[in-house]
Amino acid sequence: MDAIDTVSQDMFTVLHGQPAPVVTRWSYDAADPFAVTLAVRTRADRWVEWLVARDLVRDALDEATGEGDIRMSPQTVQGYDIVEIEIRSTDGRAVLEVDRDLLRHFVEATDELVAFGDEEGRMDLDVEIAKLTADAE
Figure 1: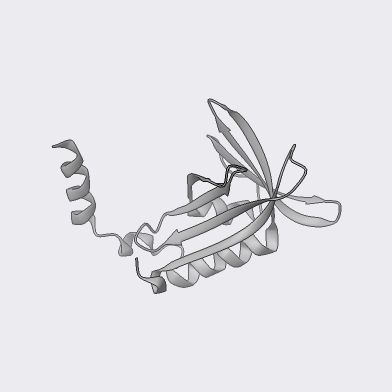
Figure 2: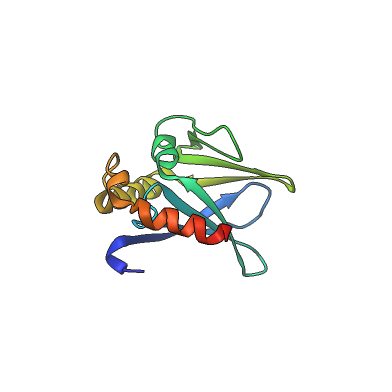
């Protein structure tokens, strides 16, 4: 993984129902230009990861987004601009609050690596097809 083609940022995040903030790690790799990895550090000191569409994260800075397991919406809570992130699974749901300015900074850093709209030019379809067919063999 080339450090020039990746962005990673740790943020303290409010997890509803928890007395102390948790750490989230937002990562972007230009080799997978459509996706962002959201990792949440658990009390057991392990990371739980979700793969999120990058444009979903960008859009959540200004409007409610998401229809599936991850939904995001910008809000102002007690004078602080946040993005509320709801994560659903068969095990339940979690609601996180992330500082909107920190998330915006992360999204802007991903845009500096791969501009929104230029993602397809970064993908090597032959390599992606080879990966898929190798798994099928």
